[in-house]
Image 1 (cartoon, rainbow, N blue to C red):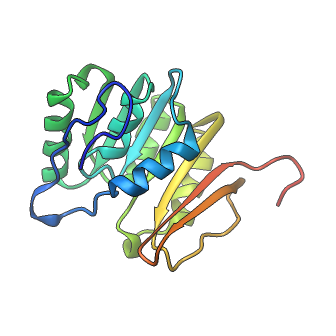
Image 2: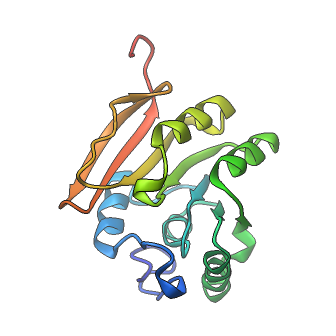
Image 3: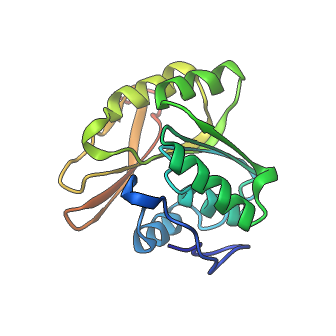
Length: 189
């Protein structure tokens, strides 16, 4: 696992020990960021279900100003801290051990808004619909912001959820797919 591009291109990232997470492969990460950018001129991102922090770290390396990382596994939080320290990115990051729904409420209470939100949960254990509804209710996605959902390649997420519309879908075999959501246009479902 490594940083694909940007300021920290080629730097290795530690994985969470004991296979507690399913890291996004370098191939998927590279393809995803080609769709998203590939580089950013500042902004804030939220890496929910962060695992080793690979997606948020990639976004920071490519120009995001800040990232909040959230994972409920203690070993994942330790690994994120190690990766941020190694890359000297700790000042641009906040890391929390928390449940996803509670984390969404906590950032909303702090009146945070994000340009980019990564949702990469354990595929079978989470309702993407519930997560997107919570994001909509809390208003944490900034104007023009995007939500990246990494999910099982055999499952297609709905085109419309909670005021968000799927604007891009990519499949990487039967194992992984990406669906990117933005606020739906007026008059859309």
